[in-house]
Length: 190
Image (cartoon, rainbow, N blue to C red; front, top):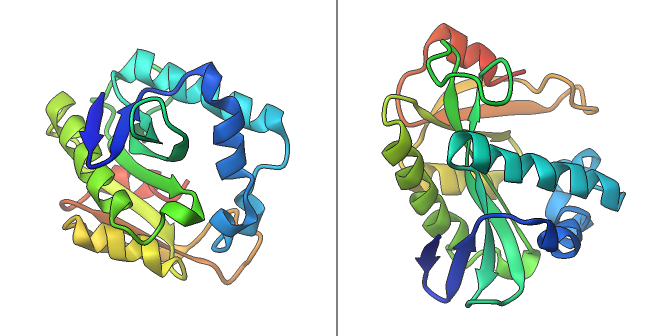
C-alpha cells in the first residue's frame, strides 16, 4: 500500500465493486472511447476479479485510489504485466512489459493525481522487475493522458491504427520509458 498526499493506494477487493463500477460506467470518464464504458455490474465484477488475480500472480496491479484512509474510491491506477501468453506466465516472455493505466472520476481529474500515483506505480513495477519497460498506450485524441505520459518521462515510440476500435479512424499512441523490442511493440497493439 502506498500514499500520495490526501490519498491512499489499496489493492483491489471484491468490496470495491460498486465504486469501481460507478467510475467505469460513467460516460464522462469515457469521452475518448465511449465503447469502453461498462454498462453492466457483471462486467465490472469480472474485471475486478482479474485485477485481484493480477496482484496474486504478479505481485502488482492497479491500485484503488481512495480519498484518505477508508474514503471513497476516486480512481484506479497502476502497472500490469502485459505481452505474456496468459495469467501467471513468465516475465521473461519476449513481448513482456509493464502496462501503465489510469482512470479517475472527473472530479479527481486535473489535479496531478494520475501523475503522482503513476510515479508510485512505475517505482513499484521497477522494484519487481527493472528489466521490463513501462508502456502507456492511449488514443491520440486523449490528450490529457498523453500529457500525463510525457510528464512521467515516457516517450512516444509508436503511432498506429487502434485495432478493434469501433472508430476506424482511431489512432493508438504507444509511450515507453525505453526502446521496445519488435515483440514488445507487437504486444502493445493487440
